[in-house]
Picture (cartoon, one colour):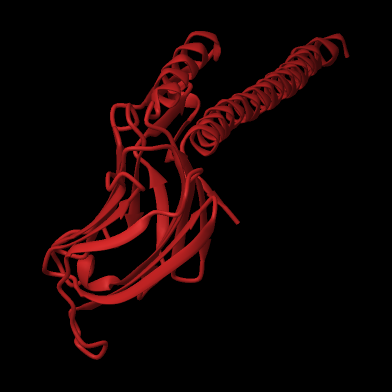
Length: 285
């Protein structure tokens, strides 16, 4: 009997040791699993927080640049296939815009807390793109240019312009010094409407211009000096030159829909946690 008792004892010890090993392994697995799950939650939470930071910084840059453009340069609206640019022209130029954009860039990049960069190389002076037509709207000193590309998708997409001007002086005289017109039915004809308001009245003119020829209209004051000169330049381009402060609303009429982009880009990133890159769309709906 004693031999039998001693013979069974090692089996019970082995079973007990094996059971303890299994139990310990299960407990260890549960602990490790719980730890991994906890770390996963922390990582997910951190990633979501960083994603929100990226979005917040991008939006701050986006709406800041859009607000500066609208306040300092022009209000842009899109209605169907027509795009309007409404602005106050000043012989002093748009200098405040350039300095405000540069100051805003410096402020954001130095205080954002993430890798935020604003590419304003093209926005040093106010410039917009109409896409996919490839039309550039550029504000130079004393001049606003609407310049399509020489292609059917760009210049061929322009059906006309409406230009409204208001000056704080007696109504200027409208004088064409070059005029190249075509019948309305001609595929190269471009409609142009000019409306001018002065302190003592208003006047207007409309023509179907040859979009591949040169035409020039001058708005002359009482001294026969040009206040505003409007040039139609091939292909389908318009330049508004001004020597006096004035209100200007220019509507470009297209044959297809378009989107308007500021010549600037924003890059907000947090390395491996994500990146957001985009253009500024200065359009009010």
